[in-house]
Amino acid sequence: MALLTWSDDFKVKVESIDEQHKIMLRMLNRLHDAMTNGEGVQKVDNILDDFIVFAEHHFESEEVTMRQMDYPFIDEHIAEHQDLLVAIRNYRKMNKTHVPLSMATLENFLMSWTRRHMIDADRKYGEFVAHH
Image 1 (tube, rainbow, N blue to C red):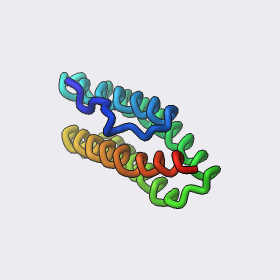
Image 2: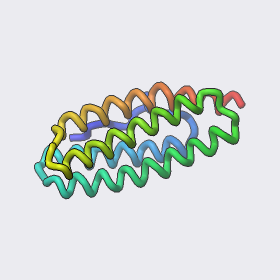
Image 3: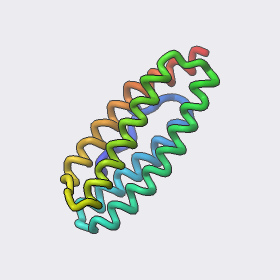
């Protein structure tokens, strides 16, 4: 069962961003499946590694365009990106030092962050792009 399903609620109306968001949702759903099916820490870590690499690429792409367009809320937007990456890295670090955090805690954070960021911050950016 999908953790997050693509819908119009997630649309930013910037095709390249929407396509990357779809990929991110698929990756999060793959992570959810691995956690739900008890596929193990190594599998979860591999998926998180892939997600981090993709997210960094996606965030960099967004941020370059934001700078080029002189987006007025870029600092807040970048801070949200960093919050996600720091949280995932902290989760990974805690697991490696044998102070495991609940996978459910990570999953809840990722679900909440993704919904909030895509529906609020990214849509706001999409509206800015549409008017400039």
